[in-house]
Amino acid sequence: MRIAIDGPAASGKGTIAKGLAEHFHLPHLDTGMLYRAVGLSVRDVPELSFEDEAIVAARSIDPSRLDPDKLGQARVARLASRVARIPKVREALRAYQVDFANQPGGAVLDGRDIGTVICPDAEVKIFVTAGAETRARRRAEQMASQGYDIGYEEMLRQIESRDEADRNNPAGAFYMADDAHLLDTSQLDIEAALRAAIVIVNQAMAGQPGS
Ligand code: C5P
Image 1 (spheres, rainbow, N blue to C red):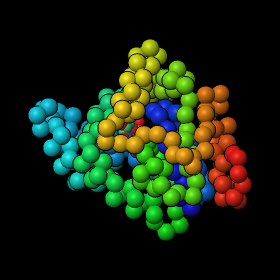
Image 2: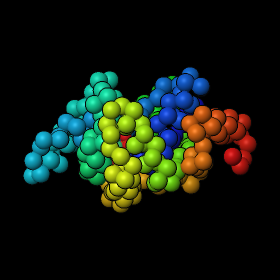
Image 3: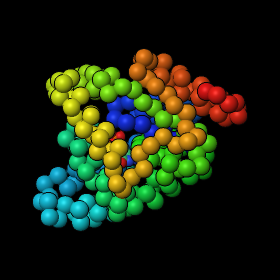
């Protein structure tokens, strides 16, 4: 079974994807980490060679050696958003994601273009979303608990600007697939959101409509 999870920053898609992978005993790939790793590796590269270096980095990335602690930082997210606009970077990261999705037994992937580009024939697609204010509050609390006190207002500004950049990404398809199930987590805590996602998957696998 292939499960494609897409959605904007801090919607809860990563936690839901991880939870679904555990529940259904499937391997999980957080595809944002690939873009973040490319972004981090070109953080000090001058503007003039930024694009070329990002393409080189994307082609030589080792997905088995990603460090979630380093890659989780807000400034890495901004770099990820920048490199995600480069078509050859997306192309270089694509084969690994497609192979991961199509491994025997299936997988759970989360990102921005999983249900539309990477795995358009996934058995289950979920588009996870929440209002920008909710996402900013959640992410600010999460960062504060890790010792990064960014504050709600600044986090809201960053989330809105990343939403805008992702929405208008000329190189990527960031939209909800026609056959995706919408899961709005604005009013749900993470346990309730995961339960709702499990119901969606079970119903989809049982061939039931309307989840
Ligand atoms: O999901 P996460 O916040 O880690 O993603 C970081 C950035 O990587 C996103 O803002 C987006 O620009 C980019 N990305 C993407 N396609 C994906 C996953 C992430 O363009 N499948």
